[in-house]
Length: 184
Image (tube, rainbow, N blue to C red):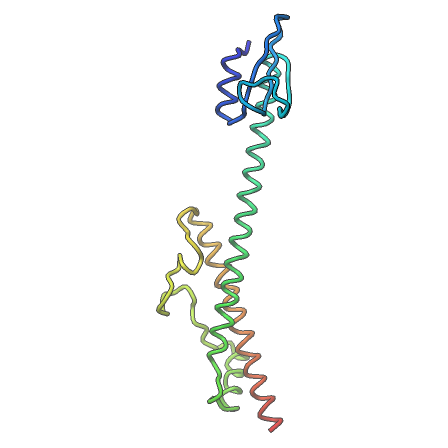
């Protein structure tokens, strides 16, 4: 048999405000929400009769709260992955714009396209440390709260987006340069 004390302990563990009322009919009323200790406060979430039903309600609340926390964590993870992809895409685009500039020739643009066609274009690894500046945790936002497999997943998302954007911008720049050369 569940006691009022056990209900109070479980409510406290879950952070649920609890107040009770025993009108003398042998059935304690448990009111959740509202002001703790203020049974007749109008802001209560629900009221149940008896300690058994109170524990059942608390178990359901605890399960729902845990599931909500899982959903928040999953949403946060998806947002971090999307952020890593977006950051990688931007960094790859930026790096791709450095391959050809106003001093480059049509021959260099064609050589770049030929290297891409032969799969011989050297793409700098964005996470290898070969570039000065931000560290990997700075690039991918703090990684301290992640498991190793999650860090790897973030690295992969960043790097794939980087390489894809790098190649796309390199090709776009080269084709634009060749187009301009033909038009002149």
